[in-house]
Image (cartoon, rainbow, N blue to C red; front, side):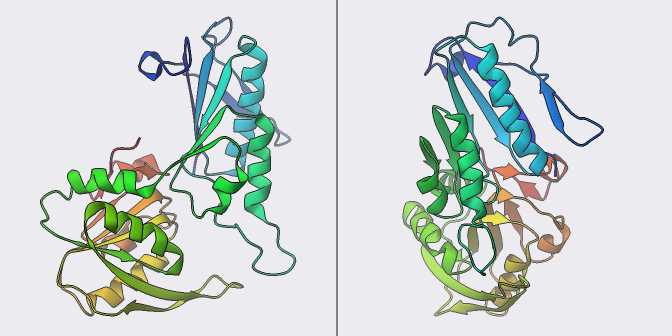
Length: 287
């Protein structure tokens, strides 16, 4: 998956509607593997005082490129200019605890790198847990509710009533907030994951299942194993339409395995532009 970096500026802070893009950040690797970049000509000599980097970070190279871009900007922009970061997907956020002795606390390591830049604000979308917002300085969080409400008023507006499904214990708080915000019933599911192998087992639906269309809500879809196992368990008990919403669609195994189980898939942030363009993948409007 390729990481993306876009750069915007405005004359003064708080004037996003008057911002301008600076395309053409030149990124490359030296033969030895070190990363390098060069700012576009439009940045050099620009007197704007508010700068925003929007980073889609899906690789280690992308993380390094972001740090290099921030350093180059600080050297090029006027003294006192503000530097902001929009980071919808926070890499390493799922590694927010040490599950097995000998492992790193990767989320803390990543957040330390971001904090070292001293951004004026860091805006993240639906972080995996409360750990990352606690570790990042000057953080602003856009919750899943923001995006699901847009989805409910848009692509799913034709459905009179639906139920929100929390796929596992880790997703319950998020699903509860979403269900309350859109006035839906809530269904809990559970699973087991082997911390050594990552293998999933025992997907199950708890309690009664309402006879309504079902919207599974979570923050990240990686390979999709969690959702495929859950869909199979839901299909055993319901013939209603089944939808999947994830804030961050990594889709590392493509969409075909998910398409076989869900009537539609929704995400505001897709890591692969080619998948985002497919007709079966409907994107909610991002903030």
